[in-house]
Length: 502
Image 1: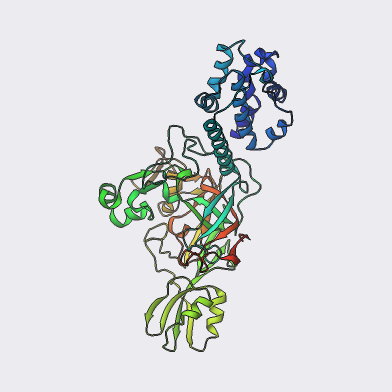
Image 2 (image 1 turned 90 degrees about the vertical axis):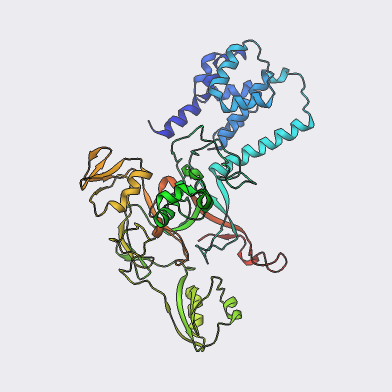
């Protein structure tokens, strides 16, 4: 039985918890377990209009409406305390049957209840709770606001862009840790390290059907895969990169420099945004910065950036020219009249026309010149940011042959993402205690990269993005702020407001 079917059945038969309440209200108890009819009578019992049925038919909104119906029902039992209502909403499968059984005959129809006047404080508390719950459901299942913190997607998305991310595009996920402080991610406000969530309840991964699927070229928000473990005093660095650089023992014992080592559930890992380059089942290769998917060269994003070597007649670069060409990345001086700049294709074309520019060319890391910080972090895979692969992107249900040579490519998938035990015994691969020569993937995986190709920590650094880490699709920028400028000196980028993310 699928998770979706279980959820649907739980929703359809939820009023069955009120069998005794139905009888208290003068209806047949078995009405509570007849789908559709049960909600018709539930609405009558709380004395609400039947158009509430429309709200019950709206995905995710219906969850909120049912909670409201439970709260309204409690009023008929003269239970108006916030603590009582919270118990009923959080633990309905225990509280509602208990309510009917232990208070038989105490139900009063809402039309016959005496007038109840709330205090000003109670009205404010109810209003705030209503707003928080409604906003939390929208944030959880519909869309969420994000801010671009780094330049990895320049010039497509700018540092200081405020955007909406649609969770309906690929289907919203059930949160792994539902008990959490509202509207924050993993750390409580005004604290450095205090968790904003409790792990008393952990829910398994489930994604509701979405409006579509992840496509090549989509700007995707996802939970950082390498963020399952974090050194709290070095949160802006990958824990696994720290271990490679300093060794496991030092990172896990040097509390002064690295702090506590904390494991985070998927939904509380850092949110990243990159562009989808390869889909499950694709074979990816990067040759001199050009991306090939299944052997076909892919077009670059229109606003993509690369690092270029530029040589002038000996003069310094004019700051006005840099501003005009919107060159915002650091300019590195390599020698007299020699520079490294991060440029868009448009900026390159303009600079080529400049009489003071003698030479301009891409700065390309040559093939075979391996970089240890590039996935899979092995000397027998001499890949770098500009020359990478070929690499197969795993697809759910696909099977690959396992060898000692290709094991580094799939080891993290097999262990961290799909929960298997893996070890090599006398040059033989053992999976969950048994010899294994093949592996079948359970999840889809994606390859994501930033448009600012030489200033983006992306899949080239830490590998695949599992589908259960995908949060949503970036769709709309509603505000753009230049943090380097004063409030009344161009801080708001008026020409970048209200734009569709492409």
